[in-house]
Every structure is written in structure tokens, then in C-alpha cells.
Amino acid sequence: MARNRRNTRRIRSIRDVLNMRTFLTIVGILMAIIIVCIGINTYKRHEDKTNLAKQKEEIEKQSEAIFASINQTISKTNQNISESDSYIKMSAVGDILCSEEMLEDAYNSQTKTYNFSHMFNKASGYITDADIIMGTMETGIVDSDYNGERAPVQFAKAVKNSGINLVTIAHNHSLDSGAKGIAETKKNLEDIGFDVIGDNSEENDWIIKEIKNTKIAFLTYTDLLDDKSSKTKKELESVNIFDEEQVKEDIKSVKNEGAKYICVMMHWGEAITENVSERQKEIADFLVQQGVDLILGSHPSVVQPMEIRQNKDGKNVFIAYSIGTYISTLQAEEARTELVLNIELRRSGTDGNVYLNKINYTPLYVLDNGYSADNRYQLIDLKSTISNYNSEDGTITEATYDKLVKAMERLNRILG
Image 1 (cartoon, one colour):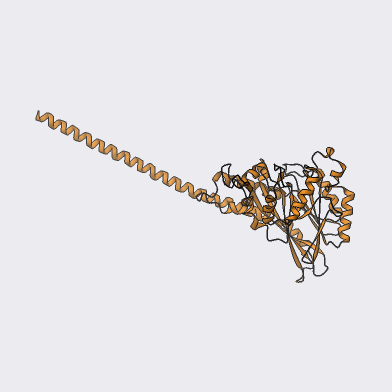
Image 2 (cartoon, one colour; image 1 turned 90 degrees about the horizontal axis):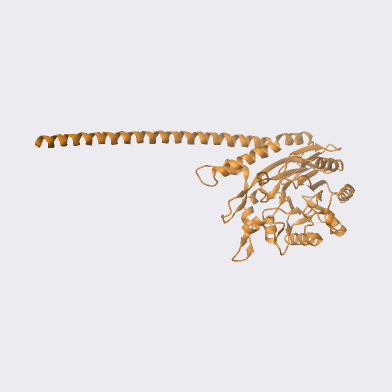
């Protein structure tokens, strides 16, 4: 019996040793796996950061090169620059839309009021450093019955507070609420301080702004009008519809009023395409021939190519076929990419003429934070958000970052 007990203890001791060895072996293997995983993860994070830095650097290079050739062309034709010259800064954005989703995002059910300010807070700093900032108010600003084409005055106030001070109301939706609707929109916009062009309710359907002792004319026309055949003659006469004879007359009038520089805002082209239509090119040719100095396009809702030409007097004419939208909730990903176009003019102290001096831009993006977010829609600076992205800080997700990169690459391709 004693021997059996000794054998049993020996077997148990061997088993315990084997169990300990197995345990230690398993622990060792697990530790090795953990160390390898940490090493792989560390290496992957290092590679990701390296690739991220390269990606950001490439985007930055592409962005800087976009207007390099245009500004080089401008500098070659700018002559007799002197210390007595003065400079005027203008900025332009595209279509300003207020969808039903934006109305819902801005509505406070408890106070029954609207607040759109969060949509523009991050963008306002990029468009306030200009003497005049213009855009297309493609939304009726009315006192009731709000929907995807009619918005409250609070929306226009938020747009105004973001820096925009001149708007055109000539677009394809101008007469969606008839002549009464366009008149109501103009009054509401003027009451909060906008300069408004695009309707034909007064003797002049254009405006001349004197900026730094320089008269600059702003004209606007739409080549498109929804349900045009159903509109009465009086309704059609209440909005600036593109007509060559009328344009000639308007240009002659502003020149007689002493305008030194003429900017035309055109609503034209086809929606959701980066391709410039033949009709846009035809109108651009006509406007250049008439002596227009700057052409800013809207309606396609996406950014389209830009170019510089010289008119018969040898002056540079800059054409932006479409600046895209300033803000919207259009589903097409291309329509979420916007830009603020910055135009610098030079008033010569020698001959008194005004010349195009420099072009640059700030790319924007309409960020959708999701249906449940307190502030769902926000305009953000596309390039700086990409540049400041850190996958670990949680400001934006990796998926959102990838969308922003694709948007920036698409914009660089179109403009480059």
C-alpha cells in the first residue's frame, strides 16, 4: 500500500510538472503572439502615418499648382505696376440652397424657431476678407410655407453673417412662386442688408458698386427657367432672362455710368456634370466680345473648369463656368465639394483702368454628421481638414477622411 501511494504521488508530481510546463509554454506562445501583434501594429501605424503624410503633401502640391499657370498668364500681361496702384478683393460662391433636411436640422421644436448658424460657422472665416462677396440665392426667402425651395429669413441672415453681401436671384427657380415670390424674396433680402440683382422690377436690373473709388458693375442673367411655357408675360418680365440684345444694352448702360470693371453672374449649363456645355461656351464667347471682364457661373451644382482669355483690348477675362454650390444637401457626392473663389483686381494709378491681378480659392465641403447629430450639416474647409487629420483624435472618421481626399483629388483634377 505504501508503494502504491508513493507511485501515485510520483505520477501526480509528474502530471503537475507537465501541466506547469504546458501552462508556461502556452503563456510563452501567447506572449510571443502579443509581442508580434504589437510590433505589426506599430509598424502598420508608422506606415499609415508615412503614407498619410505623403498623401497630404501630394494634395497640397496639386492645390498650389491649380492657379499657378493662370496667375503666371495674368502677371505676363499686367504692365506698368506702380506704388500708386490700389487693390480690390472680391470673393464668389455658388448656389445657395436650403433643402427640407436643412430646415429640419435648423428647427427647434420647443421654441418653434430656426437657427442655421452652425452650418456656416466654420466657413465664415474664409470669406470675410474681401470687399465684396457674391453668390446665387437659389432659394426663395419668404415669410411662410417653407419647403425645399422656400426658406425663412433666418436662413438668409445666417448666409449674410457668413460674409456674403451681394446675391443674384436670377436662376431656374426664380418664378417657382411667381412674380410675387421673387418680389417677396428681394424685399426680405434687402431688409437684412443684401445687395440684390436679378429681378427686373425696377428700371435697372444691374448694380454698380463703388469700391475704393472704383466703379464695378454687377450684371446677372439666367439662361434657364423651370416651366417657362406656363409663365405669363408679366412673370417672365420680372426676372433677368438671358437675351443678347438686353445684355448689349445693359453693358452700354453701365459703361455710360462710369463702370471700370464688369462682372456677369450667369445661371446656365447642365446639372451635376463637370463638363461645360456648348451653350455655356457660346454665351461666354458673346460676353467676352461685349467687353465683360469677369464671368461667374452657377447652376450645375458641381465645380466646372475655369479659364482665362484675352478680349479685343488685350485685357484678361476670367471665366468660372461653375463654382458649384455654396451649401446644399444634394445626394451626388460631387455636389458636396464647393469652393470660395477669390479674385484680386488692380486699379492702375497710371491709366486708371482695372486689371485682373490674382486668382486663388478655398475648397469647402458640406459635411453630413448624421441624422441624429445635433448639428447635422456643416460647411468645412476641405484642404485644412485633410491637412489636420489625425486618425487618433476622433475629429472625423477614417471613412469621412477618405471622402474628403477623393473630393479634393476630384477638385484638383477639374481645376488643374
